[in-house]
Amino acid sequence: MIIKILGPGCNNCKNLERATREALDQLGMDATVEKVEDYAAIAGYGIMATPGLVVDEKVVVSGRVPKPAEVKQLLAALATT
Image (tube, rainbow, N blue to C red; front, side):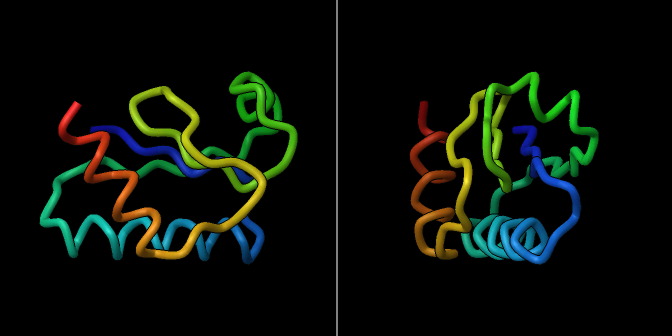
């Protein structure tokens, strides 16, 4: 699983990364977490507001920071598909 955090490095982006890593730890999942800070690359995903969470090239959250429990639920559901 490849997870990308889209955003310029603001506090919301850092919080999303923290929540994502926490969810991965709780689920015992192994994944590569990458930060994407290039505006052209972010725009390529079609999101208009950061931060964004991309799992295996699919945008699952944009424009907000979900709670760790929500990230955990999203990742668990995507792992079973």
